[in-house]
Length: 229
Ligand SMILES: C[S@@+](CC[C@H](N)C(=O)[O-])C[C@H]1O[C@@H](n2cnc3c(N)ncnc32)[C@H](O)[C@@H]1O
Image (cartoon, rainbow, N blue to C red; front, side):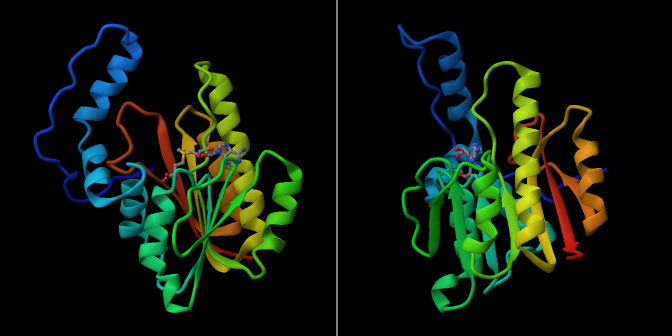
């Protein structure tokens, strides 16, 4: 069952529509117009978040209360850093407890309070070495990893599933008992297979579609809590 977020979506003030410009392709014009109309894009800019994705994690955490002060968080697919910013805000590692580890295959512009690592999570060596690199178990593994879109739906879906499986493998090795796991999935009829894989090792596994996740997007998040260890 998909959990419905409570409350109203954020809105932004009036945003000017971009004028079509000669030389821009129709798809890039459409993308630009969508960006300008999107209240989450405006809010992200106003609030200093590096991505509108930050609001997805805010909604997930407001509902499931995963990012407790002083917790240890692993953020997979962290760039450009919106989720990492939210995690740092909520964990407050600068107070001396807790940590935020931000992992991506591309370099992350530093975020105070987070430790960034460049790793390709499609590589077995990354999956195997990451838990030990963290030094101690973590409370939450977040994965917003997504492949660059190829335009071929089933290829993209398969690549996303592979990344979610990599995140789950890391979660199994790095989470403390009672910990939580969040992973980006795609609604395509196969997402429940992944949920079934996750269920035995967690007390609860639910699907959640934040308001900040575009309605036309098939993206959905798995939120699993109570890792059994
Ligand atoms: C949707 S973005 C994440 C947005 C981020 N959560 C934020 O709030 O800014 C997906 C990220 O997954 C990363 N990614 C894709 N494949 C990856 C891989 N094999 N290993 C590590 N990161 C990967 C991409 O580089 C990209 O930065």
